[in-house]
Length: 315
Image (tube, rainbow, N blue to C red; front, side):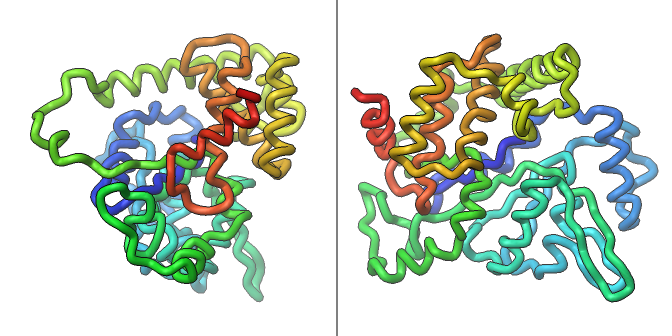
């Protein structure tokens, strides 16, 4: 349930990667299934012939979707795509092309897991606890940072394009991942024998989720997923050792991380540790989690930005 942004040139596989997400998601818990069913039932979208145990939603609205279509609205108010993605994934392809107002409206559910819509007759609250998965080009032509095709954009157009995504929105995205161009010789080799299948990745994801659920029960936490841990629960579920705290503090100072980004790094580090079946979060997990925050000041253009991490590390 961590928010994820893929950045790379056209044809690099960003959309394909995002569409594989349903294949690795853990199954819905009974209470999650009930909440999802209520949203779909309210819109008349629940098929009575469907299996009782619903699949996690995967919603992928087009970038021309209206404000009300994305976050909800109308008279009477109706849930939007964000609520239809409740307990699942909301995939926004070509993220900078979405209406700025609609994207900014997602900041509320990304923090609270719900959307409040006010009307003269009153206010309604819709559930919207989803994982945001987005994809974007690094510039208008899409080839900034591509070693094979030069970028044709001016500095002004690049800055204007990247400015479509506000700092507060990017700050709420845990993982900024650069996706490089696919080389023709990679397409010619046939199926990769060394690549993991989705079913293998899903087994690891489910195991990590089970570790989170068991830890929440053992420690008496209300929050079961790492991505939603906050305050004292985060300190209890993901305590850092002395080396990890010093490293993250030094990185936060040099990279000017916000308090929100600081805590999101710890949440991601806790998940990385869970994926490794590690009980404790150590400095390696913090370093990897931090590497996904380095492009926060705009769209990632170069995976070698991780060199900044070596500077923070002191190497």
